[in-house]
Amino acid sequence: MTRLTILEYPDPRLRTKAAPVATVDAGIRQLIDDLLETMYASKGVGLAATQVDRHVRVLVADVSEEKNQPLAFVNPEVLAREDVGTMQEGCLSVPGFWEDVDRAHKVRVRALGRDGKPFELDAEGLLAVCIQHEMDHLEGKLFVDYLSELKRTRIRKKLEKEQRQRSADGVRPRAPAL
Ligand code: NI
Image 1 (cartoon, rainbow, N blue to C red):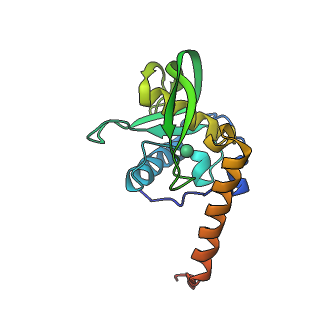
Image 2 (image 1 turned 135 degrees about the vertical axis):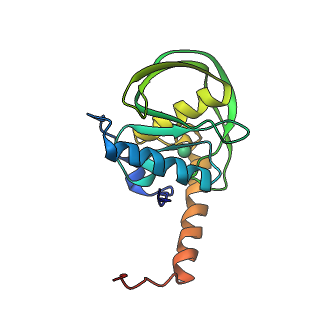
């Protein structure tokens, strides 16, 4: 498994709309495993392929306390949603910010699993919110899009400043390994 690089807001690649997966083949299974590894290493509870610059409809999640219940969703669809409520959300692509977002707290989801077989799942609470948040990524949408223009601009400027500082601190480009 490989830990992948997570794109950070306002990287325009995060705005790409992901394409449906035609077949759950070895490449997709590899992507699922790499997404899970990257998500666990980054202490996230969900990660969408878009965030690692792969524009296919794949997302992973694990909201368990023990981090031992990995879930993978290929071509996910929400069949029903209810119980809209507010929850504080963060995002590995928007590091350091948490804001209130309204979403359905109960959803029924249909997707293909890592084995390529279709399944349906009733999700509640954090898992329901997480699935919708990750599905937004596949549409090129971020949770900051639900905030006011003022808040979004403040977050963008802070992150751009951090990103500039990081490159000025001179992570020197490495010569290719032979
Ligand atoms: Ni996110």
